[in-house]
Amino acid sequence: MERLLDIMRRLRDPESGCPWDVEQTFATIAPYTIEEAYEVADAIRREHPDDLKDELGDLLLQVVFHAQMADELGWFGFADVETAISDKMERRHPHVFGSADIDSAAAQTVAWEVQKTEERKAAGATSLMDGVAPGIPEWMRAKKLQKRAAQAGFDWPGPEPVLDKLAEESREVADAIADGDRDAIAEEVGDLLFAAVNLARQLKVDPGDALRAANAKFERRFRAMESRAGGTEALAALDLDAQEALWVAVKLEHEEA
Image (cartoon, rainbow, N blue to C red; front, side, top):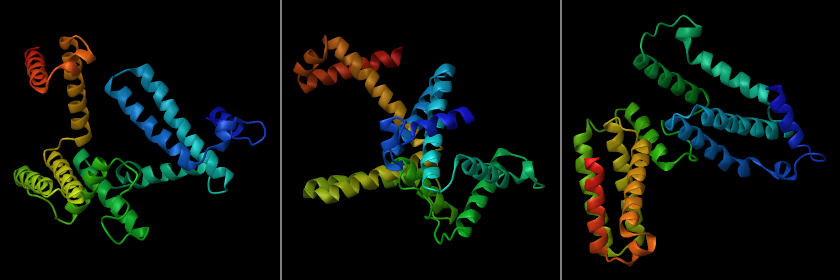
């Protein structure tokens, strides 16, 4: 670890370091941090250990990069980051590092949420909505907001009424389209997406995983359409009915496979 920390210190040296690394800020590095986290997740999904090792290293570098910039500003150093997360993990696992008795994963999940709620209150939070980071993907933020509301009992009793809500939101999108109101269309589409995330949560389906799978399925089928048509240009030359016929054929082919 000391070797990596020294490498980052040298890269950030204003006189002898790398010009690109020296000019970076928290804001410019943040997108890379998010990207690296997604690449870790992708390596896990592909069950590729060598890629996972590399991507975890890239993600660790992001932590070291941010810690080095914070150290330069006199805020904190890497050791402080390490201490903070160690303290937090011990605090949130009193059944391992203390005398609490928690005997199941479900019970630990409840205890974890209680502990986080207490920490937010201690930090001055006055609402269940406090602390839901605005920088995370919006589908993830929607799910977190819904889970926070559920802590106060404000939640659907099951997936069935959410299906009704989805139908209601779809009708409201259609009404907004008929009115030609662009602001209303955007608002109603947002409500529809929010309800879709709520349905996934009720069904214990991760909306990100579900959308990722849907994207992969669409891409796979569209590539098959291009192949059947004889290439991208040939596909684009077909009218919509012919393209739809190709889509149906490809869909049936993949369902039978």
